[in-house]
Length: 517
Image 1 (tube, one colour):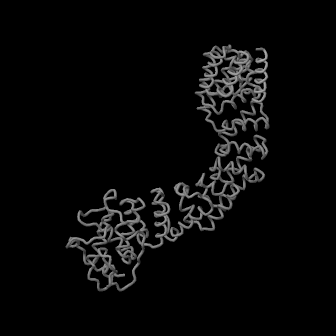
Image 2 (cartoon, rainbow, N blue to C red):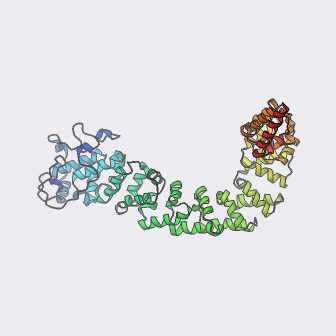
């Protein structure tokens, strides 16, 4: 190329070039499509009357302020055509272009010494590439970083398809951190096929409006750039029975995993455990995709512990995994062993332990200091005996509520005149009363007393009253029954009958009432 024979100030081609040049079109050269320097933050324009980022003629003697040492001047000539009359102008233009993105003269000199390709590119193209990068939202500091750390971002043609794709098809929505890492961490040859690989995801069923969200949540080097088209297709094909592209949309990080070394062996463990239940595995992966972060050895260690210490079979274990796949996050010695040991001490056999863990899997992961310890105190205080099945069942019923809610429910019963013995008796009949929302319990107790004119102690006989829906069941049925018989019916009879039988009974009672009139 003859960089000294080229001018970015004229749209007409130079006629003095005597060797080949590199020309790319990362961004339209038409000034109408160029972003003005005032859009940069901080501003790129360092000269009040002239900017290298727009096509215009420089003021007279603009470059006379440059004082190049003979060695650098000769260096630039030797990389330009041998008879270049505009060496000073072209070198000054390059210096000024880089200065506008914060690169000093000394840094530019080092770049020229290290990077031969910099002198084989038209200055118009360099400027257009800077504008192209800026159009994707990159500021001066970021572009400066690219030039000084990965100059190929500015000089190679191979990233043109990528920049065009990011701008025109993804509309510049790729997160800035992702964009910077993408350009800095990958070789140009791996970036050129990026658009094709992303389009493959769309072709395989990924909604267009979900693409950017997926790309912003994956490691682009692992998931896209360093993989071939064939590898990406194999991953989608393998995941197809478990949700395929839809699974990837919900949990994009799955794409980060290597198919042969991670996805296949780790999902194979679940396949063997479930007896080939693909629907079950799909549920597990959707509820807890992080299970794929654990090695085969880690998962097998947990499975073997549950088989040997809890005496559970694979079918039971997989059912537990279905409701609580996060079981694999719990340390065996610090959490699983002592808690299953506690259940054994309460008199639970393997079948009881299985039912307990299906009902209250959070027992395995809840904090003892901040959660379980307080609940043990509450339960023992109202009358539960330590190391009994009753205590274990009460703990199971209370695992899904906070200690604060449990304390408020107990306080509510005490405020309405119930003793600890009364609360214990009610919880033995209806263990779930300890996990009901305290505000809901209070609403139903007030309605029982103030609207239904009942004695609050009727709850001792029928504590399940507190578990029925207030508007749809309690209030609705009471108002109907009140209109027919004055509402004088036991709580049990009012609420336990099925909706169908209640409707039939309502029609019958209404007919009898009409005949009596």
